[in-house]
Amino acid sequence: MNAVADIRSDAQVTHVDVLIVGAGISGIGSAFHLQDQCPQMSYAVLEMKDTFGGTWETHKYPGVRSDSDLYTFGYRFKPWIGPPIATAQEILAYMGEVIEENGIGEHIRYGHRIRSCSFSRESDLWTVVATRNSDGADVTFTCNFLWMCSGYYDHETPYIPDWKGLDDYKGQFVHAQLWDPATDYAGKRVLVIGSGATAATVLPEFAKSAAHVTMLQRSPTYFFCHPNQNELADRLREIGVDEPTVHRVVRQQIMHDQDMLTKRCIEEPDAVFEELKELIRAYAGEDFEFEPHFTPKYRVWQQRLAFCPDGDVFQAVKAGKASVVTDTIDRFTEKGVLTASGEEIEADIIVAATGFNLSVMGNMDVTVDGETIDWHDTLTYRGMMFTGVPNMVWVMGYFRASWTLRVDMMGDFVCHLLRHMRENGASRVEVSPPGGAGAMQLGPWIDPDNFNPGYLKRGMDRMPMAGDRPEWRHTQDYWSERDDFPKIDLAGPEFRYTGEHAAQREPEVA
Image (cartoon, rainbow, N blue to C red; front, side, top):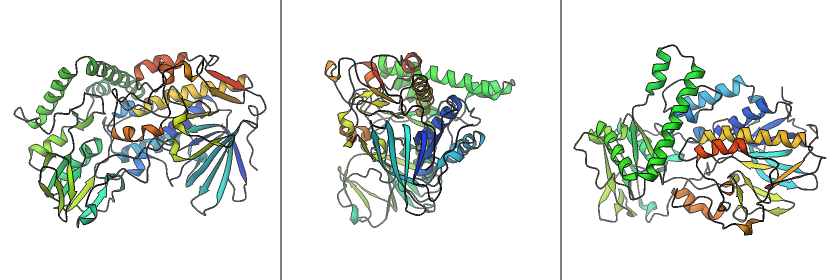
């Protein structure tokens, strides 16, 4: 049983071995792996919200659901039972079960907004200062290791383009990330601006009761239509296979299929697009016209596929409840939006599904030995550790495969690293490329020719740099990393260890 660092009203400093930042899908999974694989280590989870869930608590727009299947988006240690594409409430219930079944809740400190994280090489400790929402008091934590699970986008300030005339619009305008579930859209004209996963989710849901829904997109996206069921899972259950086995086998099958699809998108993108069209025609009809609204200008998988369970987007379009306009915005008007081609789209409610603002390390003030870290000046090791920043990892999942696959894999790596440090009496670990960064050609965090969503392109100058060797970049390739990660040599030249005095420190509460 892990030691629990108890926060009391008069406590000045709380020390734990590991501090996890964030109680979303990454933080809860990381907490499980830590207490399962390193039960002798104490930990706490700091969460700025008053509950767990992260993304699934932030977004409350109509129909909010996963755009990855839950057999791979769910944790490997917790079988998923239900439809592959799940609602936010179903995902929150699943996470709640993980917390309850494993006693993770007693480690979570809700309502703690981190103000600063500072590392000292003199003590080999992180000092984290957070403001407690309940009373506005500042509380201080120290830890040997910082596990950043804060995600990659700003949960409070979404991305809204600088549209001309927005203040002229007399209807209701809202970004999907800030949607109020009490909003009544029945019988109203709804305009959705955007064409990604969020737009694909809200369009069919709005269409159920709105007078009409229009999706205004600057450029088309790729859709993957499929029934919201998994035939293999259904068959295995039918013949009496236990749920852990169903989860493991179906998870493996899906990952195999995704690997094949990714390779085919690179080798024969035109053929893949034709197959995606056929899946759409199954719901929209054989005579469905793809030009101009459903023919993207980028390659398949340069951006995430928008999953369309049961073809709901195309069923709404076919039924006349929804329509698509491909154009850019000239300006907003009193009644709606005027496009560059001169068409005015009138709407009672306009919903911006225009994406996120990138958040690197939760936009926290991070210092090492008093020097503020500019993440763009650092070099990443496998997209999780950074030069010049000791005793810290950042969980950045996958965009093509399920995010959580990397949460599980990183959980194994971090726990292996922590055990290695403790067994060898090391209190500090840093990464540095053999021969120095100058021995490599440096480039952006992710190659824009490989993957180029808007939030990354807008914020690439805030992200760490990558090298020209696979281990010095975030490859986004789960299928190679699942083989490479278990083979990482913690005694390799890229890891530098120091000291003994902090590694054996016992957890304490001042």
